[in-house]
Length: 202
Image (tube, rainbow, N blue to C red):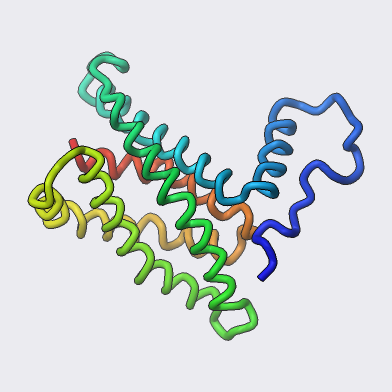
């Protein structure tokens, strides 16, 4: 199988000698280069950063809602836990999920878009959410009794919300976003999704 990002041509082509590029353009070109050279590592790092920021954003929103000071008593270990999960699990697993969805269910098959979506929604999403609960429980230093209690109270509501929020997003992502950008697209949405998940622990 060819590499996921074999079609990327970051940093090559016309205009490579221009020195008047804007900062966003330079950042994008650098990201595309890293994505071509180190696809899994780049997606893992992106997932870790955005996951951590999602947790941080959740804490800020909670303090604003309670009319407290934005940076008062922030839990700095929360973003660290989310960064670890994003880097070691969310980014790499999503990378291979999108890669193998295209391999297992090629676009030439009838209803390939719907098949991919159903596989993601009915198999990957429930398993991934359970993994998230387990990893967060472990990183918080809690025992299996706490994990079991959290699953009983929070798993089903979170899964229902996942299906409601992510189903249309994943349909677009899986079927219309270029393969090399699907993890990034999902990470941008996950910024708000992890904000919601972090709020479950409050």
